[in-house]
Image 1 (cartoon, rainbow, N blue to C red):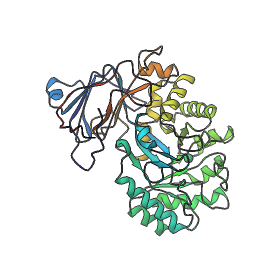
Image 2: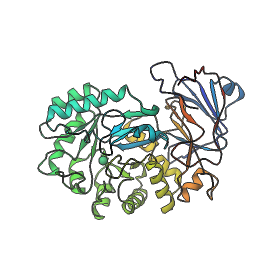
Image 3: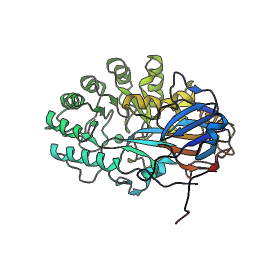
Image 4: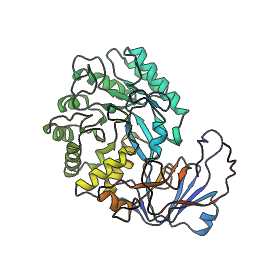
Length: 407
Ligand SMILES: [Zn+2]
């Protein structure tokens, strides 16, 4: 069953998810919610845990999870969007909609730097961010929410520019691709973006595109951005000695990305845990890039981290959901009453050696995604077109929604 994106047409239905085997909260400190049901209404979670018969019967749509695990819809905080559901870097249409089939319900732009011939002057980067922000406010590929419009920090941007962009809705800023003399020149620009209320992000590690330079710990310490983008390397990692400095001398979120260095991903996870700052550890993909389109990228990195460290998979699910929502101030990311109804059902893949999604992750497998609900709307129920089939498929057991089955 699939429903098209109806955001503008009617309010989200009342959806009950029953028969959930485990509920992962998205909060790594308190990772599980007791019970087996979730009730959503008006696009938010209104009840979670044990649902009584009256609550289930009141729902327009009832989904039986079949014993699968419910997790918050994944938040990919490093996606190279441009305009529409198209990536010029990989010449692919429909990649964002495909990410929904990897359990991703929110994408956050890593700046629209891949727009062909993107402008580099202050007026141009400001206009680009405003246009991207406004166009994705009206466009939800596959039902995904895209936070786009990250202003590329370029010399010459003034406090007034940042205020104007912020008034138009832009709340993200990106350091790393500007025509600066040295990365230290980003410090005043990051400060100006922060005073306009923006979440500031910074490329970390070796340069990824010609003309930009390597950004090291000393630069991040001078800049103090909110997020160290692909701290593990995007795709080239900074020297190992930089990581402890970034952990100790900044408060930046430590974002690791699939399209980077796996060894340093694991190193950063352990450093964050040992320093007591695992809240700052985020998982994202840094795609589409030269590494390609990766609809299952977030799930792969969760699986790599869970299977190659002694930390539990639910911590790493938190790193791609609740911890990310905290850093970026989002309404999604947690399975809790009052939060956005962004939910993925995941299960052990059919034919594997494990019986639950969490055991599969610990084993190094990518779990099956068996259903996705975003903003309260079921986007698909049964199986993802990108993952293996689940051991226990989710099913719609009742629906009072009128459907047309029109082509
Ligand atoms: Zn990137």
